[in-house]
Image (cartoon, rainbow over all chains, first blue to last red; front, side):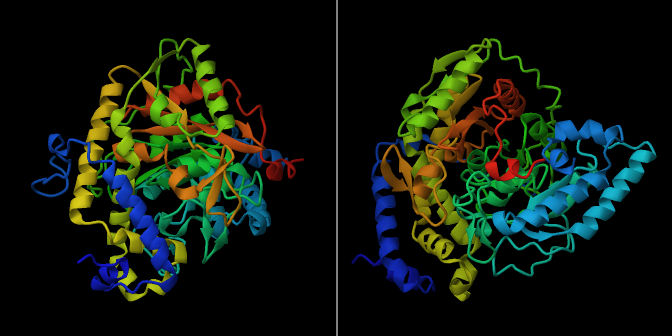
Length: 60
Length: 474
């Protein structure tokens, strides 16, 4: 079962403004369409730069 | 005299102050008198700090008399975007929620600017929490573009752009997460530099999106930007993203010599779907550098096709995370536009976010490959011209397009990659300024600034100033 935008936000404790619902649905749909265009990216080839830096923020 | 004085750049004012032809106090009073009288129209300032400013200016004059000259920015009055912390002063983030927030410390860059002798005249308007590009602020009012008071100054650093363009601040700073230095700089016809990510400390700047935020100069000239960057750049252990690398003498690097500079042009992304008049100005700008001995090479950056998605997912998610608690507990205290963006930012999954970071790495590597062949990339800063205040759509070659989606198209990649990017005014389209963007390799601010300086010397604006400001001169 696919949850609506409203249900997904309410699950996270967020009360959505009524007149935002249709705009949010439209904008989320546009983002999902953009995501489809990333399917050709070979993500497995790309390590990401989130780093686990021992000892704090900088190694000095 | 005072109208002529406040129209000058820092590079023009610095020798006048150093040689005691003009005092910091005289200049500070002139800038504040002008700014206070014009703020009702432009609304660039959220608050003024005249008393402290005049005290600091007197102190700077006293030091100079004692033979202590701190450098180019000694005694220069400047207003600052209201998301940078000043110890024991209110910093609002142009929001309702933080309207009474008082920091107990200075942002690192504010400390550095105090040490450089800068005089702070007040806090500047911005898009609420820096999450937008219009500076149409629901709590502090819309900031207006000095070139046309009915139009947006861009954002989120719209107050900084408008204040510098209208001579209400000699120079300023902006913060940039998807283009928030370069968008208002381009829209207001001034110079704006987003440095390399980590080059300038963000400690004491209220975040919008940790991995995309930058702070940089917004100034009247490229040399002013170079001088300000020298002051604010440098390693800061308090900022987890700070880069420990030596700071260049950026002003000294401004030779204006671009002979054999290799300019990369990416047609597929950066010249696709651009206002035809903006495109003409940018191509003419490239030619002006070629006329001085630069070379042009077309480059391919295939992963840019994923840039808009990666930028959107990253900024939406990080911003929603920062404001998550207030979105749950007091959503009505946010402006309607940013509340919607925070709601939208709650929708992507963790996998969406991390895949966006993978795409981001792909984009970074493609840029690095391009920089093996070229010294800089040149592109339009914005594909459109600033629209009227309150409009969600912009005109693009006769078509109405979504404003926010399009205005960040050419600036967003600089945030995703963290590469330095400068905008320099390149002319007017229907009386409104356009910007030429110069993107450089990592930590190559010197190269970027020098290319911008060489272009600026060709006088692309032909001395034109906003009608609003020029009508006040005399």
